[in-house]
Image (cartoon, rainbow, N blue to C red; front, side, top):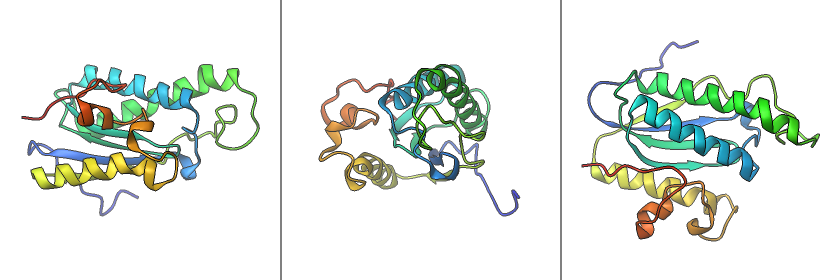
Length: 173
């Protein structure tokens, strides 16, 4: 199953990482679910020591632009993040809500995340800007908001006006 999947670690590149909810269900469609994701992203970032350059949390997928962790690999950091979010979502949120549609926090499938993630090494300033612009435009492109400033679950506010985002950001040297 892992045949043909190559990851390039140890070069000091940034990593543009994308992963999706199980069957691309909108399991992160509520503000509370996206807040839980942001909280766990902050914790895993601190514990593993990766730099967070950019992020956006969408209803059914996530994009991150990160540096290599000081502890472990990007794969291990993402695995830890995915496990923690799925545990939190199954714990408190699932009991609090009683919605019955797939994708509501009240109905969490057995698998919360797709098994894999996409990882693109970002090796130039131009590619870094492209990936940040892509992430920040994503909520607008998908019709969730009219302007990136209206989607708090991204790093847009950090780059637009040097304001704090939900998760502490790093400035890449």
